[in-house]
Image (cartoon, rainbow, N blue to C red; front, side, top):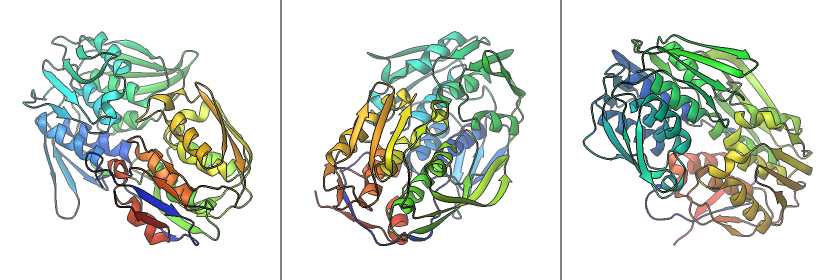
Amino acid sequence: MSGHGTPIPMTSRKSGPLNGVAHVPGDKSISHRSLILGAMSVGETVVTGLLEGEDVLDTAKAMRAFGADVTRDDSGVWRVQGVGVGGFKEPSQVIDCGNSGTGVRLIMGTMATTNMTATFTGDASLCSRPMGRVTDPLALFGAQAFGRKGGRLPMTIVGAADPVAVRYTVPVPSAQVKSAVLLAALNAPGATVVIEKEATRDHTERMLAGFGATISAEETDEGRVITLMGRPELKAQTIVVPRDPSSAAFPVCAALIVEGSDVLVPNIGLNPTRAGLFTTLREMGADLTYENLREEGGEPVADLRARFSPDLKGIEVPPDRAASMIDEYPVLSVVAAFAQGQTVMKGVKELRVKESDRIDAMAKGLRAAGVTVEEGEDWWIVHGRGHGAVTGGVTVESRLDHRIAMSFIVMGMASEKPMRVDDASPIATSFPIFERLMADLGAQIVRNNV
């Protein structure tokens, strides 16, 4: 499937039990950062388990454009010969980041404190997303940004010739913004301080420390204060990428709502800044257990077992949990439709500026399928109908958003009538094996002729 080519309509229909082992792809967040930090290091970084979806492959191409040697061998092992902090060369071509908001924002940060110019673009979805939240703090380092109206791509970044360290408070909970600032700080002399009022996923901090940067984090009255010393010599690492919890969400949630299901999803990263969905599902009464808890590469990991859970109950999800599960709210809303009672989700305005307006996209699709949804600017409520009472039977728009597409395909596996997605091609950006993996578990998914 391609997020940049011919639309691929797809239909899922009520399935028999989903059973088996679901080997989901590597963690997307860690995959992006492995390539970027490998490119900024001295020596050869070796990465196994990299997510080979379009988003991450676009980041690999970008690192090559900036001068790093990035290769993949026949066994799927990736090698990155880094150029060191400040060693990027000016790219000769426009950097196309496809559908990846994470990729483009992190790469902008990475090059913003090097004396060079680079132009970034992406697909229609990415070109509609705001970049000011990243370019504003990058301007404090001395970088300049020239883009379309509203701070949108295509955009040219002129890196700072004489970057300075900054002190910056992240205005909204965003791991992308925080990470872009930290990556920019690597080539700025002195100590850069980033303050986040609400903690977000901390893969960047963990990986920077692993690559040898001097970085610390402490909880204060201001929030979480992260301090990074600029101009380190990052040292190449060997990285084993854990499996992606955001991808695991789909087979896990499908198993909970499809009668008779029992699915094991091994080697899932359970970083506490990413595992909010699984905590929420268990609070709803899901039969979801962690097996073989362990630590790999500084990240907590476990095997997840999800079994059919007919007595799910709606809950109010704590707003302070939003940052740890922001990408999982679409599929959570599907599970909520099969629960009894209301599931209330607050503090989620970030969903409005993802690959699509995810609150609007999911609310419209759920309503069309017979589920009552209320919504506001930063909240929404799904009125659950209970097991066996969700009608389905409609075609919904994916809006070039992989998570919207996968969420409604999961919904079709348990609704009375099939669910059709107008274009499932964006799924390839993050979960290229989704269709085959779900079919292997027993899901009834078919592609439709255009």
